[in-house]
Amino acid sequence: MAKDLVFATNNKHKLQEVRSIVGEDYNILSLDDIGCHEDIPETGRTLQEKAIQKARFIKDRYGYDCFADDTGLIVEALGGEPGVYSARYAGPECDAEANMYKLLWKMHEEKDRSARFTTVIALIEGDTLHTFEGTIEGDILEEKTGRGGFGYDPIFRPYNSSFSFAEMSAEQKNAISHRGKAMAALIAYLQRKQ
Ligand code: IMP
Image 1 (tube, rainbow, N blue to C red):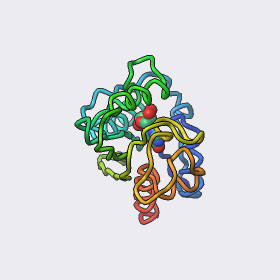
Image 2 (image 1 turned 60 degrees about the vertical axis):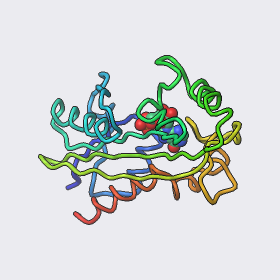
Image 3 (image 1 turned 45 degrees about the vertical axis):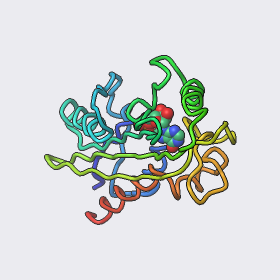
Image 4 (image 1 turned 90 degrees about the vertical axis):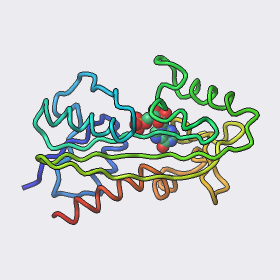
């Protein structure tokens, strides 16, 4: 019988991607599926702490085995900003546009444009915890380039690429991205156990 496993998200794209790869041995449930509509605390100081906090919250409150992801953009010249604050860099009510403009403004005279995206996934099964990580390094562009993707995609170009993330198809981005690598590590682990 398929094993229930919660992915602590309601992002349809992320859910579909994981479901299509893990196949029939796991029944991947969303937060909606388990009736979780409350705000999950995100007070951790690192990506790892935040991912573990989310997975632990679901396990403790709802009893399901669970995994949760957390991603940040880490810019060298800004001492690691926006990091764990990537989603709300320009303020709690701000959107991706405002976040990007704040970052471009802070970087406007900066020569060192190096940055990286990192995703951490925390998996809690029973009483065991595993974490998986994926990183991609690149540069912050001088201006927005491309119309696809989301978040900071239009201002991030991976090293050895002529295109920003926002100029790539979803498949091209997933094949090299932080989240793609972390998900691949999680899925390889789940498949080894089957
Ligand atoms: P989350 O942990 O996946 O919710 O990501 C936190 C924030 O990081 C998002 O709100 C985005 O601003 C940013 N982010 C995460 N993943 C990506 C990505 O693949 N491209 C661009 N921005 C991203």
